Length: 224
Length: 224
DNA sequence: GTCTATATTGGGATAGAC
DNA sequence: GTCTATCCCAATATAGAC
Image 1 (cartoon, chains in turn brown, yellow, purple, blue):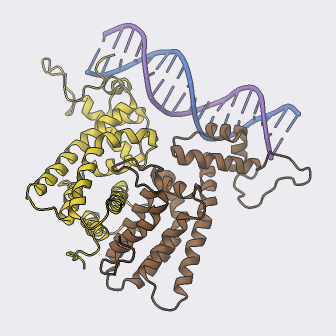
Image 2 (tube, protein in one colour):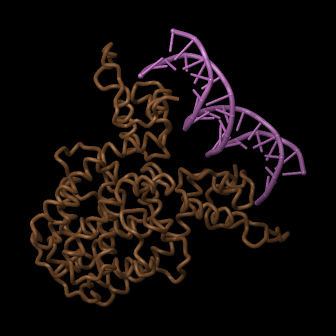
Image 3 (cartoon, protein in one colour):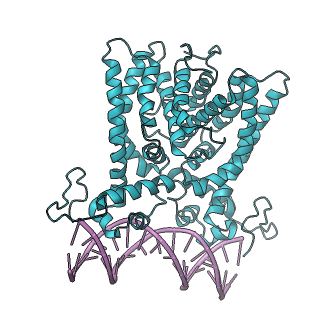
């Protein structure tokens, strides 16, 4: 049984120029898997549906990723790594300014990377989706991909809000994450409200809400 | 094919005292389904696992509920109906006072019923779980069970917060729901934080957070 | 590295005896 | 209303030719 989990080391034979329309098989599988995971969730999506959508053979998925879970891990990591990098970059920039960070700036560093440049980017919804999966599937992945970033932002929030108890900050950061997931998980929110009109506006609205919730006495900047 | 969707009209033959240990078959199936849906989610749970846990025959599930989806609908409705009733009762009581409702009281009416009397109640987590299911499964159910209550609370919030635009209220109520779901969905939150210590405290914390987020200029009552 | 073919398991649903 | 037995299908995964 060949590679099955070599993520970075691409080994396609440049020599013979093994053609494939544009993307190679591995990428085509990742793209299809990502789209279907977003639409239907992980458990509800079959490998057959993925490979058929990718226009590749069923066995190719196993060859490249070893298992369905391996494929999920690879698809997820591909999107989350740049997200984490952007978040930490923004956080480090804030901390480098010397003075204690501002809660609004922290929330912006945490949430704004989700808006991204490309409104068509599937990354946010992929992230949101995973939180709904059965714990056995989601928990190890979420732990692996997010725990470090979460811990660093939590620590920075404690500096930014010295008058709040750590417990309260913990709860409220937790709620911010919940609101974020809810925003990301659905194209059209299922309930209990009709979709707020402009989805691109969601992140900005969430930043406001988060800051108000975390630090109720700060002056509101963007309130209408 | 017999009933399959008669929810209320119980038709067990009282005549011959058809014994079953304590609960009748239908209830046993509902209990088992509920527990497994909470633990694993809907798609990941098989009818066989449900009936085996309930100690009843596989065919009994089909006899009583018609299909796996029918069973989910019944299990969900059994818990949501009392929740909705409690919420609307509290809302009506507030509105009956004559003056415009207060945002904190509204959030309390909306969220406090989730705390319930019984800390072991599976209802909150069942509600939280359903939001993570594939849209095809969850959306019709959520729509059916929650749209009316959501609309009524949204209308009341508009009265309570006349200085906020309806769009902002819509977004923020949406975020409150997201934070609520996140709180309900997990026994132990998966990420990105360790579980805040006392889960019974979660609803109270969420009420504070919600009110601050919705109405940043109101005086904070319970802030530590 | 990609394919065909297949092994193997488990799913939802139903027929029909009791 | 409850059971046994079974149908039928789809799933993950693998073996082995090319």
